[in-house]
Length: 334
Ligand SMILES: Cc1cc2nc3c(=O)[nH]c(=O)nc-3n(C[C@H](O)[C@H](O)[C@H](O)COP(=O)(O)OP(=O)(O)OC[C@H]3O[C@@H](n4cnc5c(N)ncnc54)[C@H](O)[C@@H]3O)c2cc1C
Image (cartoon, rainbow, N blue to C red; front, side):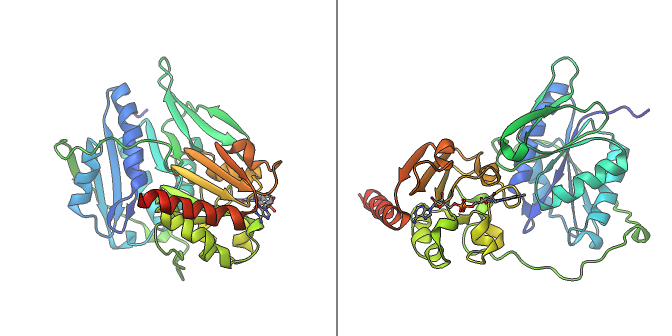
């Protein structure tokens, strides 16, 4: 039987650079590797993986970076990526594999868990290690975010996907030492049964929702597409944030699908989340409950969103939001 050792991160790249989720996973993985007194390694795969990116993974906590370059890894495709990840997982036998709860992680983690015949916890928001068994305690929201459950899995490796912004990256240390190891991809195309026919690029202007420190979201009560581009955008701009939405505005085509927050949309955790004319249904709250501060603006004092909010204003958004924006401008100019 294999001797399981160490922690492995599946690293994601964004425009050739280390994605922020990867730094967060490395920060989390570093703690467990230290607790186990074993290595933290990071897999970076693509058609070209810049050496500087591998060094960046070391600066953020990795002891070892496996670099897999192959033209077939240019675009993410589950059936090719799972092959390289499965091979590396079998060869290096980590105790823990951490991945992001991203579009890639959501697709790749179940494929990997199935191939290795082990369990998987997705969308975890907290992880700790049992001091006696050294098994991960994996906390994830359940029942649409209304409760949290803790899972543990005694099959190895323990595979977990982690929600963005729930773990902290460690301070970048450019002097950290680590090794970079090139690994051959050896992809068997006879096992790849699908091909990418078309890619539709996410429609995003300005700051991406996942990266925004402040999100100004509007709900069905906004009433039409226009205020998203004017009233809400103006407030978001003053706060250097991004405009988001609940599901109905996205379903109605008032905003791009890419900015829909919630169980079936993006899970966000900004410093400040401003929920405007959003009732606070559990499926929406599941996507924003990780925000540090929630501010609600709603004309209905009984709206559920006020139960989730740290600050609330009861009133019509048409009056409250412009006044709020004007006051902020005044304070920022002072
Ligand atoms: C399986 C499933 C998955 C789902 N996934 C998601 C998801 O990912 N994200 C999501 O958001 N929803 C999701 N939903 C839908 C969810 O249940 C709610 O229907 C939705 O969140 C309601 O959106 P809302 O709050 O914008 O609209 P509403 O519930 O209609 O609320 C509108 C609010 O606007 C207020 N309002 C109206 N006019 C004004 C005004 N002039 N000024 C101030 N306030 C005003 C009203 O008082 C009300 O509170 C999902 C549902 C299901 C069944």
